[in-house]
Image (cartoon, rainbow, N blue to C red; front, top):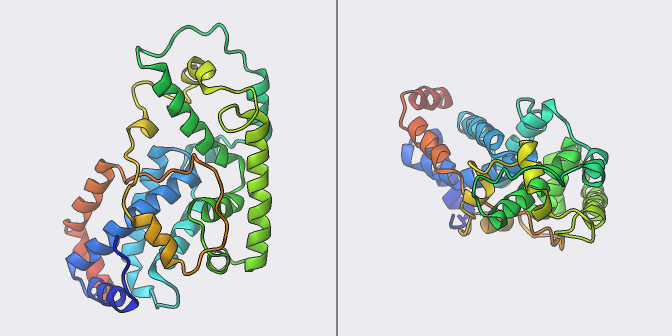
Length: 286
C-alpha cells in the first residue's frame, strides 16, 4: 500500500461512501493484511483469524460513513478491529483458555518420549518450524485480551503510545508501563522454558510427535509454513500512518507478518461483486 496523503485518502473515502466500487476495493485491499495479522495474533489460529477478518472488514465497509477524520483511517480501522476481537467469543481459545502456568507445566511434565512417529513422512525440520511459529503465537493466548492488545500493538505494529492509548482508552503513560510489564512477562517465560528463543529445555524438534498427538500441529495442514510472508510495504505504511513511532522495537522474531490467505481474498472479491454490496452502499448514502 503506497502511503496516501490526507487529501488522497479523504477523496478515496468520499468516493467509497458514495458507492464507487473501485475506491471501496482500494480501502478493503489495503486493510485486509493488517486486519488478518491483527486477528491471527489476537485469536491464535488461522481459521479463527480468517473468520474474524471477514467480520471486521464487513463491519468496516458498513460503517464507513461514520469515519469523521479525527484520526488516521488506519487508526480508525484498528479501533474497530480491536473492539471486535477483544469481545470475540467464537474462537477456540475462548472455549479452552490458556495460562502461563498450564504452558509451563506442560513443558516440564509432558511425557513425549515413547510416542510413535506421526509425521506422515513430512520432514521433521518443517514440522519443527511449524510448531515453533504456532506455539509462540498461541502463547499470546496466555495473556488476557487487553494485555494481548497492548503487546501486539507495541511489539508487532510498534504503535505510538498516544495512538495506542486512544485506541484502548488509556493514557499513553499507562500504555507504556503496561507494555513494558507484558513484554517482560513474555520474555521471561520464553527465557525460562523455550529452548528456541531462550535457555529453557523445550525443543520443538523433540516435541513434534507429542504436538501432533495433541492436535497442536497437523502434518497435512501446515498453516504457518504454507502462509506467504508479507513482503509488501503494507505494514510499514501502517507504522508510518500511526504518526511518530516510540522506540519500542523488540526482538520477538515470531511476530512475522503474513499475506491474507488467497481463499479469504477471494471471499472479499466475491462480496464486493455481490448484490449485497449494493444494499450496503445504499444504506451509507442514507
